[in-house]
Length: 160
Image (cartoon, rainbow, N blue to C red):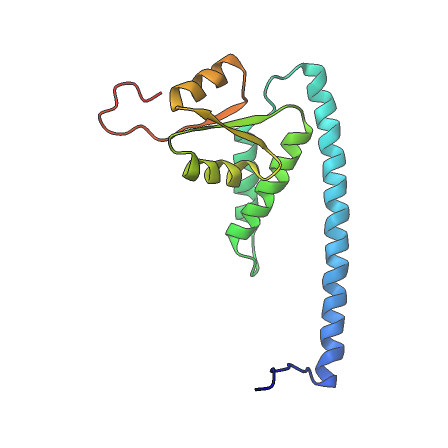
């Protein structure tokens, strides 16, 4: 059996080439905007460094930004993809602003690990800390910036 080949009629090829060129141009513009965004992020980091901020994560700011994205969104890009892209951008921006680490509770580390990675992005420094009370203690002591622990279960006297 011969492998199937896909050919594009000549008339369609020029239109396809034009669209691909437009996508390439948009990609270059997006990259330039990302470069500028991270330059501004570096300026923010310098200002925060002068303020001696211990934890640069601002969940309210992040939620505000994501709500704005969802409100303004239109077109065919799935909202979940848009949010995921921005989670990565915000996570990388956070990493530029100074030390930031995420501790994940050991008992549920599989699901919680994925949840934390999805939320803080691939650039975030993450580690499994131990049981939930140990994670909470590490946050309290300033050993980690953020802790991810499982929801308390019914009947637990002291979940954290």
